[in-house]
Image (tube, rainbow, N blue to C red; front, side, top):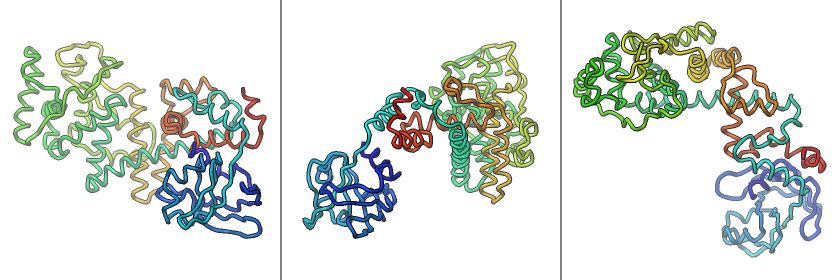
Amino acid sequence: MEKLYQYLWRHRMLGRKLKLDNGTAVEIISPGLLNRDAGPDFSNARIRIGDTEWAGNVEIHVHASDWYRHGHDTNPAYDSVLLHVVAINDRRVTRSDGSEIPQLTATFPESFFRMYSTLCDNIEGIRCNKCISFIPPLTITDCLESLAIERMQTKASRIIDELNNSGGDWERTCFITLARALGFGLNSEPFEILARSIPLGYILRHADNLPQLEAILFGQAGMLDTSIHIFDEYYQLLCREYYFLARKYNLRPMKRELWKYARTRPQNFPHRRIAILAKALHGGFSLMSRVIAANGKTEESRAILQWELEGYWLDHSDFDITQPQSPSALGQASTDLLLINLIAPLLYAYGATHGEPELAENGLELWRKLPPEKNMFIRQWRQEGIGCEDAMRSQALLQLRKEYCDAGRCLDCRIGHWLLRHNARDIQFHENIR
């Protein structure tokens, strides 16, 4: 609740001209800046008490007695507090020198807190589903435009962090990013662990030999063991190759148990994705240069991802398990997901780090040209009347759901802010949406 009152104060929802608990008139000229570190909640606030204007800090609590519970009365860092804002006035408060601090009891319409409770109660889905239809479409569009950029920047930041950890090596950064993307959510973490388990340079020494590439990757994935699949000749070949290469490069495999298979069709098993990763490395690896050359053009970018499986994996979904009708390449839906989660963020990150804003914008434009994802989150938004015509919009809706709805960050959400602000202005607003 304390964060809620901080929110109310920060956004001037308590009003401008109020009265202190002792009846003195107080005018809030500026609420100040929210402090997320140690010390008073707001700094550099400007307040007129009576006829005198003050500048200083503001502290906010649910109960006035929290001042003492938190030890502020003996902490000189709080001596600069010029106003104490509380929800419940259960005692007077003083500074470390014993001087009394002006105190304001915040009051608000009950309907506002019912709206806040409405947002907080729906913890399993879209928190504002009962009232989102009352929000102007332009407000939602502006919010989603901002969220799409926020999501792209988050993805790009991850790539840039990886680039820094790789000493500026774009190809290794692309390799790890590609591996993670091939996990398609369910196996993203295991794929990233796999990519990190061996230097890219070691792998590329064998770029002209596909069985050796597969041996390294499947061996590092913990999927090779000579005691099983003893009649599978190709499997046993990979085992022999891996044991030789593991001794040569002093490799240690990851745990096989990290891989997930739940709700996965045979053609989407991690084995086939690892085989595709091997094909991406076959003949050399120059993903970043190809991404830049494609420059966000849809078909040129799609062509980067056309890795065709061959040989053993044309009719296998797992070792020793045949799947005669398995596709030889990624389907369009999977390719589009890689364009969304790999190609566009790589282009945006490269543009951002090289001072080429047009490249970054082309990454966003690629999202605008791609169809939206199809998953339960997007379906839920559609059920609430929020359309989704392209990947730019679906990425925004995923950002909204995962980073705000699921995290309970309604106070940080522009849609939640609109609902709370309009409820604060109109006591009947909540009644209209019940």
